[in-house]
Every structure is written in structure tokens, then in C-alpha cells.
Length: 257
Image (cartoon, rainbow, N blue to C red):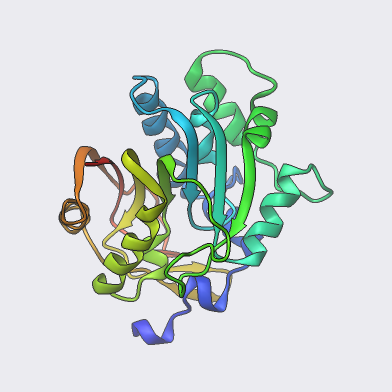
């Protein structure tokens, strides 16, 4: 299957509920629980308890209506601004934020973060919901992704599994990264979560494009944009499934000089 015959996440769109059920749920047959849910949450928890990443505004520009990677930021940032590329993602997120009928159940993620923190916090999900102050639509075709809005730059920016889904080649990855990091203050921290060496992922009957890239390319791209790499961990894939073919996951932390 060629790259041109695969769907692009932000162009053709994706069934958001199937995406969550396939890659981020607590269903017994969900093969990606370690790779996409537990490992990222554990790594972010370990990083953030050191206390050097904090501030007023956290910006999140990630793939799908996922929120589990944001739990560890509660209490470290006053405001979280969530940016998404599709209207379906925004609708799914707002359904969860406002406790509407049929909202996705993230209790498995809430339970995991409370276990990591070693304390029972029944208000953890509510805290995250109230810390998310805005959910904003983005457009990759625009130089200012959120035009005509003008948001303040963030102290920290996190992007999870997005750039490899929306970039057709490495040149476009660099172009998209340049747009994304404009939301970050000088001296601010960038956190990238990525799936390495993949070519596709499936949601239901549809096959979607993944950009093939590795840790070296990610590091070189960031240093080329004026970032200093603080930490980078590559974790071998644990999932046994043919729904996607990435070989490892990456959690990269850098700061903007």
C-alpha cells in the first residue's frame, strides 16, 4: 500500500470513538495499553515530579481526543489550552469536559495516575477538566494554526502522536514543527510523544498514514530549530497487533534556547 492510498488523519478524518477504543481504552483485547497509555503516563509523571517543568500555561496539540497524557500537569500549570485539528475531536473532548451523555470513560487513566502518585484523589478528573480552559480548532494550512485567534505563548507545549500522522514526508514534518513551536515561549519546554518507524495505523476498516522517522531525525530536527534536548527515551514496542506497524515509542523533552 502506497502512502498516497492511505488516509490522512486531519484530511479524511477519523472515527474518534473507534480510535479511542482501539488504542487508548481499557478493553480486555486492547493491545496497546502499555505503549499508548501506561508508559507515557509513567514517564511524564517521573519527569514532572522533578519540578523543573511548570508555569502558567500548558498548550497541548495532540492527535485525537486523548487527555490521559495531561493528568500529571494538574497543579503545575494554571491553564491548559487544548488544540485539535478536527471538529469531531473537539466535540468528543467537550462531551467529556461537560459531563454530557455518552462521554468517553477515562476512569482507567484516572486510576492509573492516582496509583502513580500514591494517593487517592477522587477529584483528579474534575481538576483536569477545570484546568482545561479552552479547546481550540487548528488548521495546518495556515501559518498561524489558530487564525484568527491570538493566544499567549505557553510555558510548556506537549504534542502526542500528531506530527507523524499529519506529515506526508520529513520536509513536511519540519514545516509543521515550525508552526507548532510558535506557541512556545523562549526558554519553554517542548514534550513530544511519538511512534517511531511506522508506516500505517488502522481505525476500523480504514488505513491511515504514518510518517517513517526515527529518534535521530527527531533530535536533529529539534536542534536545528534551536532546541536543547533534555531527555529522550525510546521504548521498544510491546503490543502484538497488525493494526499498526511502529517499532517503538519515543518520549522526548527539550527546551527552547
